Length: 371
Image (tube, rainbow, N blue to C red; front, side, top):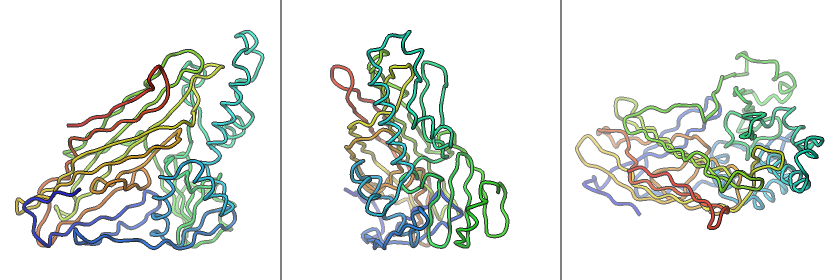
């Protein structure tokens, strides 16, 4: 529910999703607060095993629906198109690893030393770079996506490609490559291209978990791993929430990011931890506020609720709407109604987030709070 204080009757706010991928332009459109824009969903096609979205609006619409689907619903969406995503492959790895561990759970430590600690599927995708091993050889060993932004694995094929409009995007561990002329023949040699040239743009990227945001009202919370124990079969969960807000164009606009990540793992028979797909409830509520140069303000009270089977949930949350998601870490842009400007960055406060899964006598729950 929105609460408006001392606001012009015709005060205007902008919302537009800015995709992380590509040099996509930051579209800004002034909207009346009471006007709700409904995007039409165009057809999504498959070309050379790569998803093709006719334009950015189609991509955003389908993505926001995909990320809120259950694993089974997303699988069915892919099946209808004949598409195989990195998300699907990752879940297959999770299932294979858990089955492998279950198979040998009653073996002694001496017997386990003679057996490969991982499934064939695991080694296949470590070797081709789809997944990356962290803390290898230690008690905390685990694996995750290699791609610099796992949020896009819903729409990336095994090689990291997706098409939006006339541009072909590839996301890797540290680069974004964009073929701008829809020439699929260029894919053959794209692995050798590490700098921009004619019709190909190359951008270096950091893993999203290492990026640092800046702004007066920035805050973030990370629960770290909360585990039910340290023995084989023990369960653990972690959650991170981060908010950042910055003014631009001398206060005419405000750029906001509000990101959430939840991961679930289980202690392996062979030591270390593996992702596990399990029913998890994620809930959040918060207040958001913007100040205008005439000393008026606009305030919101919003919520987020998602309950489904997950192992690695990534999303950006639109702070001025409930249950509105976009690729992690998207920016949400707001423009002040002319001739006013914003006085301060957006403030998100009284934020309370929780994530709960099975584990221990009464389950495991983690909390991130910001007052």
